Length: 476
Image (cartoon, rainbow, N blue to C red; front, side, top):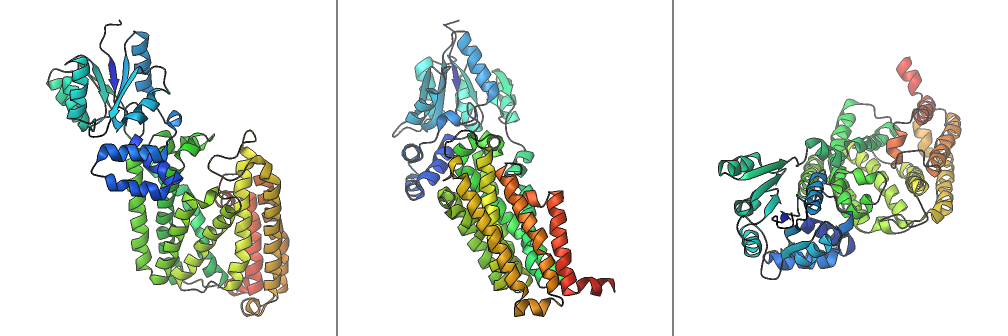
């Protein structure tokens, strides 16, 4: 009925499966990090802070994930002729703009200069407008207790069970809607499946034929540290890419983009993973700590700016892969020779191009990729760059095979030349699969799961061991 009390919805964690203040902060970090960090000086003046971050960040409100059960509740209320009101402690202009993206919303309330619409202040505002017991209220946290106490009906969305029980004990009409987050979503946000890339830390040990338990044990500890560092960066990257991921065919299902994991929880996970990486890095010595710090700084620069710069981003990807090899040398105490680094960089440059080729092949339409500096029209240039990387890697390996350094490690160097055909086949196959969009978005992860590719890599490794005389040594 039209005279029925309005349905009032809290926004953060209730109507939305995210937080407007934190969305504004991370959108601002992606758009203008200096101004965004500068806005934090208003921390004590929360309404002003919210207004500043909303102005700088300009988050894409239409893309933000809604809670489906709350949306259904709002739709049912409108079909009954009731008003649906968004009432949030977020900036009033931002809440108003959010309301305009949803035809079921009839009115909005938000924080204004000098008035932070949260808790008791929100309760007073709603009572002034609708009277006591003159509205139904949906919220999700203990901060909403004062509002529920004044409402005709309390709708608890994923909130504390004790709060719902307390409201029922006070005679309140209570409806509970499931919500919250799970540890499975937290684990997915850390992307443990990406840890397989950190086997690159073993390359210096393998290249130097240092097959003793101590360097391997040190590298394993280094892998744990690098995995923690990578997880912290993945979280930051996902927070900066919220809008872009929500427009992506598959990345829209990531925990932070979809709202399965609250932004605040994600930030805590990222901070904890980064702290663990630095602690383990310090235990492995100053050289390894320095490498992991460079990796974190470069990764942050990549997430904030470099990945949006045409061509710069693929060189940055190659550098991040190469840093893993340097980290393996620093952890184990085995030297990462200049020859090896000069060889692997064009290999990683090729794989960086493969990553972008995959995204371009899977893109729909001709528009530029969200959050990237490329459009499908750049596919030809990207293929050329990948081809240069393949040729460069093969030429450098051929030159290495006749060097004095190779003579010190390999007894029969002509066998190294036999490794060139499978090496060329592996690289060209990766480029072809990427150009056709037939692989994972991360080529390293794909390579370590691809049976055909693994077979080629094992052939290459076996030939190098044969050239070094290791098979004869191990098998007698």
